[in-house]
Length: 168
Image (tube, rainbow, N blue to C red; front, side, top):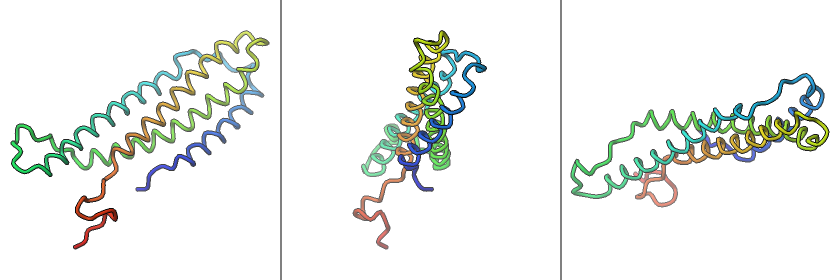
C-alpha cells in the first residue's frame, strides 16, 4: 500500500471546489439553507482519528521500547498492537484523507460563491459561516487522517541501516 500523496489530495480539492462553485453558482437560489451543524460529523471523525493516531503512536512506541529493553517485566510491557488493527487503521486513514479533500473542495466551492454575496443575499451570511466551518473541519479531517496514516507506517529495522531491508 502506498501512502497518500498530498499533491493529489490538493488537486482533487481544487477540482471539486471549481465544480462545486459552478453548481452552486447556477443553482444557489433553489438550494436549501446550509445549517452550521452540517460539517460537524466530519469534525467528530477528525477528532476520533487524531486521538486514535495519538494512542496508536504511544502504544507502538511503548511496544518498540519493550522489545529493545532487556529484562523488562511483563507488568511494564505494553499491550501488543494487533497488526490487522494497524492495517485497518491505515485503510481508514487513506479513505478519510480522500473524503476530507473532497469535502474541503465542496465547502470551498460554496464559500467562493457565498462570501462575495454576503451584502447582496440574506442567506449568504449563514451559508458563508457554514462553509467556513466546513472548510476548517474538512481540512482537519484530512490532516488527522494523514497523521494516522503516518503513524501506521512500519519503520525500517534499526539493524539494517537506512535501507530498511534485511541484510540476511
